[in-house]
Image (cartoon, rainbow, N blue to C red; front, side, top):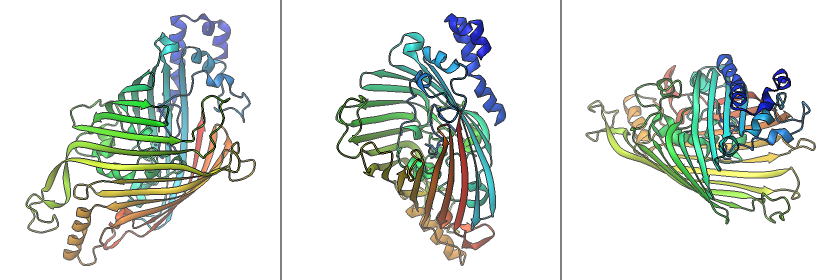
Length: 498
């Protein structure tokens, strides 16, 4: 990179120079694809995909932000710094690119269908273009992001839980994730293209600390929507509009294709490359009302709010597809009844209502890095057509738990997934014909985690999770007369921003 700069290519400013350096900027993407979630300047999806990452992650940081950042290895925000002047030069043309690698090893030390561990890795690449700097078009943002997923899913191999142990678990693949254009018009912006809804909708700021996937994209839509919904590692074509008002109110709404991976089989394999730009598979309509209190002003000279910051959200989604009943056939008999025709009754449409709350509850001083935050999220759906008809998670996080560790965080959280009424009825009916067959009720999960910042670009995370009634109480494949035993899971994650 430095040699190119010395020859004057970076200083020419012409179209040839822009094209050449954009090509160089794409080299990390090619490396990620051959070496190996996901987004644009964002944390890992989780919790993505953040895991946790993982506020609203689609808004890229200013392209020239890296130019003013510290340059020392242990102080800068990226391992590679400004890459010999490449990053700030691209910033002059409105281009920001980001590369992040997340690697983790998790294993269940008790319970489950098998004992043991699994490695999972995720390389995320994102490219963002500010169209005002690049082309003179004010208010525009172009985004493309990709994923290189490698390793093995512990949940599928050993756990069989509803609440996936890690937010980056997915089928190994190299795939496109998001591809969209956003245009701002005053206090309103509109985004069109391939989008992953877990980056904006149902997001909890404090829940993003945790590794379990249910603290990112909730378990209810993951279990109930076709293909798990347009969330990591999938996405759907659609349009999203957002309006922000001075009183702290923000309104989000969108319409998306109703099935990101139509067909029979594993959705991630049906759309293995992420390039199936589907339309015509029903519609997913989603809306969210947000209210933020005591938020700091963008102007540093403005007085700081007297109260502690918080954000409260109320939302809904509706999917127009047909959904099979979880317990009864078209004649009204239980699917477990030997006389059943085996064809579940069909319900047109599916819907859910949800609420999210994030609130800082303690901070010793207004400028202190130490703070205590709590979150809660609840979501409900009809119990006849859904495997999960209620999901709840709540927890507490402490930032800067120790003196001198300003960017560390420790957290404790609970997650609960209730089995839908008709799915419970089906399990009860099966128990009548199979003595000892376990009933189903719900799955409860506890997670304790600690994030340790080695450097601004390097984070280590130690994690412990415990699951009661995995899968809501499903039978152990080795012995159908008993349910899978409760599980204890240990994990260690490392995340590096390049």
